[in-house]
Length: 386
Length: 70
Image (cartoon, rainbow over all chains, first blue to last red; front, side, top):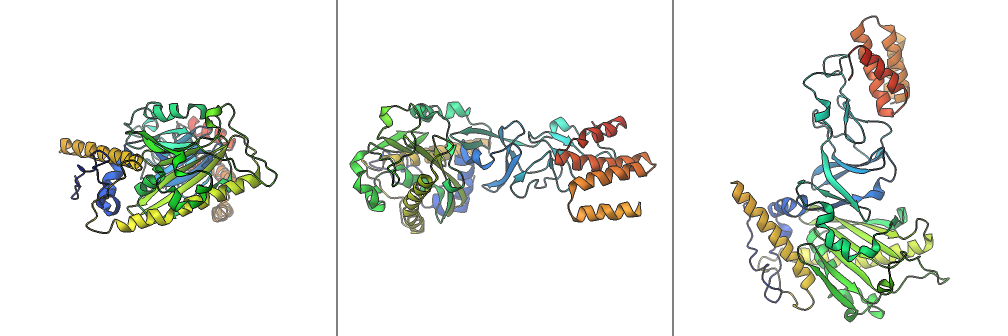
């Protein structure tokens, strides 16, 4: 149990009476560590996108909350996540993104693993030129695999290994967007960018959830998608966000548009939705494109936003893609001063977490309630273990 | 063997894995002692395994025949 035990009782009140999360949840390293387990390792968290490893054998080391992981597409094309360490001496296996041609060889004593994580060679383990030993059971010493699942190209991981099956945990969001269960094509290098932000990752979720800020922070939207065109999305314990009834497709100078996702239905002609899937994945979907933001928490006050744009066809128009990337980049950059400003505000010692608009802030409150519930469950388990 | 040692050092310095496979296999054939031969075969095999080249199969078979590989 950490030294800093925050009081979350006021967070769990109804939105009219609730406060936001206490400052410590944004600035205290000990609470960050607690949340790492309670909110990120215990859930299906976003790690990366499958497009990061497009070809069999592609491998990419990724550090997730201090844990060295290896994202790899195995020889049969399946995306997997392993701990990026040798089962012998815990040495880091892969230092930089590269193609694994045959086996993953540990650079220390050359134990080798297949791209599926199987231990396939243990040179000199029984003495020089003797590569087996009765005590070293290769079948028991494969790479430690982290539970993973790919959905909407995102590689989701459950580090603790005990979350419900992915399809069960995500049943509601999958049902909500069932029309979009279609192939998604990453737009390629021009359709990905990163934003490094001096904020706690939760503030990025909170800002994404609500439409209240749109007319003030994104005034460009006022011309066609007004505040009153938006609606709240709330699925307690799972996700929250906002939708708009007025989506206008991007066009180029010739009036061309991106092709639609086929057969998504007329409902989506002018509707679009933006949903934060707890804990750390922000999704947007439209009739003709989608995006995903994977929030990488780097510390209590530092987050990297990994942004990827997707289309309905593999060969979408390059010029339109560039325009769309720039459009979203501008919107997401407009949000930076807000999340960084709120982060600095969390150092004001008498701040009580703030109060919510009962009408406009309920998606954010929905997220806070999820955070508080998960943390209290985690603390109860820790107390029981003691 | 001295010349072979030098070529192996050069290949290591150049990180030329394909050449290392050949040189270690060659070294395995130049020594009379089984342990020493299997030592070199092991290195050839590991580099072949890493590179995903077909030679890995033959090298594995040789080691297995001597009870040195699973």
